[in-house]
Amino acid sequence: MNVLGTEIPQDAIDRLLKWFPPARSFSFSEFQSAAVRCGIPFEVADRAADRILQKARKAGTLAYSGGKWRRV
Image 1 (spheres, rainbow, N blue to C red):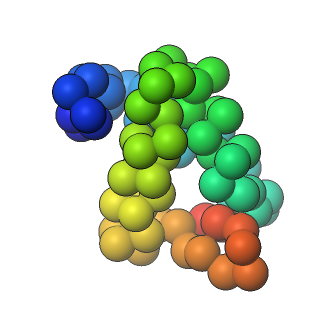
Image 2: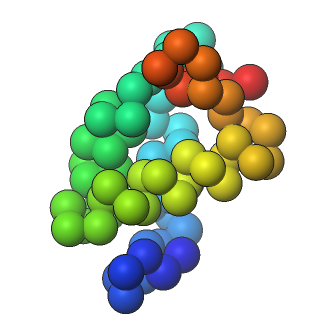
Image 3: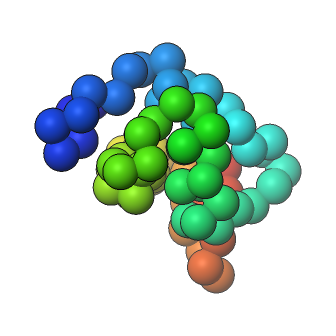
């Protein structure tokens, strides 16, 4: 995935999506912080996290409800 000219490796995206256990909901800021810990550069972590969450939502693996994200 290319975000603002920075290539984000697929393994970093996979690690990020597995970071949170299925029973736990999480906020966008928690997801963004985890993105940085998974190797996504801080400068593009906000935009990358948004794109990753939206792709997962469209794929039906994550849902947004009550200000939190959770696995479906």
